[in-house]
Image 1 (spheres, rainbow, N blue to C red):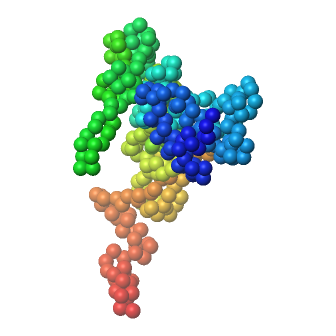
Image 2: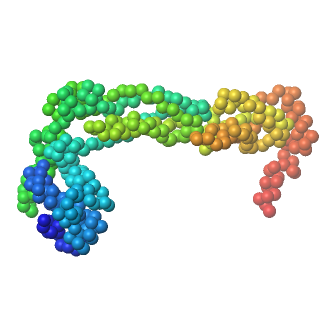
Image 3: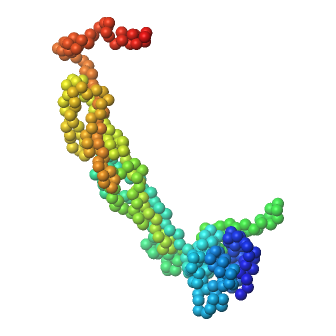
Length: 381
Ligand SMILES: [Zn+2]
Ligand SMILES: [Zn+2]
């Protein structure tokens, strides 16, 4: 066997990137699907597997051991002998690692024995509207979703007889067709996706009518999703495996229920606390008393109003706020006090208030000690 560096046409001190680039070029040139010679292709691929791994490359430089039976003694798998290279599976894995876009499904599935490059299904996002009350209790919800799932008629193969997609005849399975265009710099070969197979390199000869050969089709389903207590706007609950089905047996994507919490008529959410405004008559604010307040749980709690409560004071009801996802102490309900000044007083009420004003030395007409006087004094100072 000739020198591995010669096979890739790189100098002995070539960098890892140079080796990779050289291999890419050689592999395209000699790929059997592209009409190349299979033996040459295997040889350059072998050269690459040795030189790509710093360990095996160093061993080769030192001893000439390229991992083949001839150089290492009989009976060893030429590719299995290498540990750290990540190419234990042999040629196919090397190709897969490299030609994700260029050869795609075709290279993997076409010529080399039905090994199909699969494509996992995509994740799907579904928005779920919750009320604040549902955030408190948690809720189980039936979600109607319509996503691409494996076609029942053909079992996902895309063809009626179950044979599945075969190599596309138009592009020979490459998924790309070469075109030569004239440019100012001369002739240029460009590759364009194959129209017959939409660039996948594979198509179905007797497409399943249920899915038009896709193997998957839009399917409406109802999924039950458990939404625990304490969720917040924007939270996502994953439902594993319920997204789009993968192609050709690849794993499905996940479904995510994304939470949207509707604003509440009374309560405003602040983290785990709930905030609401309560109106307290001026008499109660002055004398003290109790308020009956509905909670988000649907209960009613009696909240003491201390004598002398001021506008803007906050009365807290501990643990009447929101639960925390995954447990922990519930938040509080915070009541911001608005003091209501009475209007439309009748004669008796006016008398009472006037008496109060007099008793407290709060004259109703402007006098020396009034607010205005104090303001004026403050400004003039
Ligand atoms: Zn089908
Ligand atoms: Zn094609």
